[in-house]
Figure 1 (cartoon, rainbow over the protein chains, first blue to last red):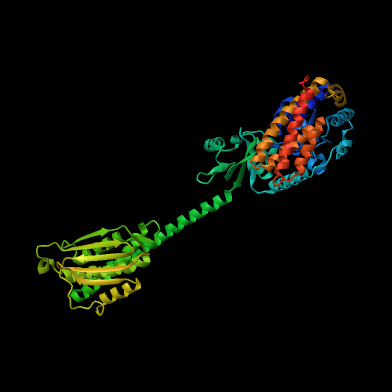
Figure 2 (figure 1 turned 90 degrees about the vertical axis):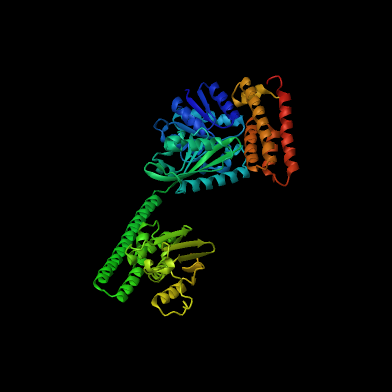
Length: 483
Length: 108
């Protein structure tokens, strides 16, 4: 009886020997140089018998047997391992799927075992060879092979128990290995994945990167799924590709990590942060509105009382409340709800106080210059209160009624805010009205405004000065460490 | 001279096929030996071991004893410390191949 036989070996000499032997016996023989080629040839050739070498690149003999058994058409084919490592590895390395095993030795001896197996197969009694290694006494054991097999076994155990999916493919993109986790991610059995183009399983957007990585021989690693999300079968995947080179055998190992859980957690976190931002914005908005309500009540109160002393008090209190109200307004518009733009804040606060005291009647100009600096609310609140005091004093005592102030004759009353920032932050507030009286010791003054400035400067660990300007007016300066 | 007729009969193939096997053996072993020298010089001992395994398997099949023995020596040798011995084995394999070619000249 003659059969269709497929011989799988990466040794050309062994392929030639088996072909010569089997063809002489009248069998139809085809050869494959590795496991992948064997699968592709077998699908077309439909062999009755396979002679398979054990150690081959990419797909070894035991794995090839296991893969072949998954195909319906090879369930009953005769699978014979013919290997030089049979003596060292023993039956445990050959796997459960092979029907028989021949220890690869001298051709004359090997030929006898091959022909014997064919004879027994024809008689239908092949089961007698299960768990036997024919010709084991005719070859010698090699310690080196034993060591290699041990390492191989370790790697096999490690790869099959890994939670990361591992997929190995050749430079022509054909898959040669998939571990159990890869079967799960790709929702396919290993035998279905083998010899398929890996690009069939990866979104097209990433193909160019993979192709360029394979072309570029200097590249040692490619990571996908970090910057741009990579989705495979509704899962978010992070993948690392690593080149593997062993002599002429080159392949690429892909390590796939399912990061869906992290992605979902990250999305939830982002959602919660967004909610937190909305809540913070709402809180600042409500505080600002409540403070605004208080200043409006003070305004109403001011209209009811026709006493300049009380009205002065109300203006001072109003300025202080406005300084805090404006911070909350600025925080509502900030990106982080923690910091405010200092120059913008102090400028707007100054304009607000000037307008509320003068009712926009005296045409006071307010300008700000200097660096674009952000400070935390911890610093912005005391600085706002200090500025409110300085501006209130400038308007009330520096300008008074500008029309009656001889120091402002021919001038537009003005306030300039300067912000300097190097090692320290320095704020200068200048006005061109009546100079600050030289006989007042600011550090010992008992006025509430001065006491507040002093205490708030202390809180900021700041140094401040108030003095008359060389060309008239008053200069206030304060300096402190940046955040 | 190698008695191809008898060896072919023992194996169960014809003389012409056996001559072809020798030709394949010589060509593949030459290539393996060249690659093995390069791998050894670049310190890739893992590759050297894999090629020795390959050469030995082929030599064992055809029963080419000198190549088989040199392969065994290479497997046992500490490749790093016994450089001279390793090169000697490479030379022995090369010499055996030359000898084999001489003996098979008319059939190749």
